[in-house]
Image 1 (cartoon, one colour):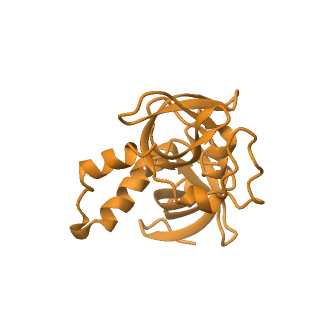
Image 2 (cartoon, helix red, strand yellow; image 1 turned 90 degrees about the vertical axis):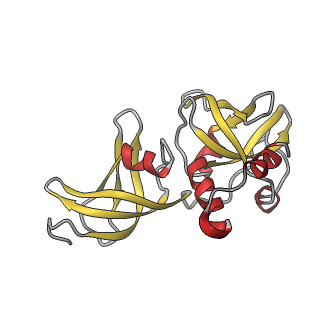
Amino acid sequence: MIDNDGQQRKVAGVVKWFDVAKGFGFLTDPDGGADILLHANVLRNFGQGSVADGARINVMVQATPRGMQAVEILSIDPPLTEPMPPIEDLCAATPEEIALLPLLPARVKWFDKAKGFGFANVFAQKGDVFLHIEVLRHSGFSDLTVGEAIAIRVVDGRRGLMAAQVMSWERVAGEMRAATPGGGAAPANKLRLVAGAV
């Protein structure tokens, strides 16, 4: 372990639990040390308001007088689970087919974790896109807040448009910047073309 000297180290941990209402949770230390505190502000800096229990997370941690704390999230991967059971209303698309769909910029209209669903609005599109709690969990989220920026892959399910994958908008935008020559922002017209692909 690191002494309380301000040095940071990279850790590949697993989310033990995270409570949105409390504003914090804990990661397991892969080296067998004490659990690592994950504060909601650190998660928000990564662009997410929640994270699923069991998600694999790469973080920079630092020793503090209260123990190890995550200070920066580098990546989050959904929990390792068996292949996602089919969601009756989703569609017959395979995960490979879903991965080929465009990522659309959207905002959460509302989401009720207790009910297990909610809706999002895709930028420059009319109508709502259904958000299912199981899709969220398999995308690495445990909850969404009103107005949260997300990127979604949309399918035409039995009951209409439905998100088949959800990602943090900040994560997608960062990946787009990294893929753009010079590291600048992606052209706005590119986002409009993607959004019009529903």
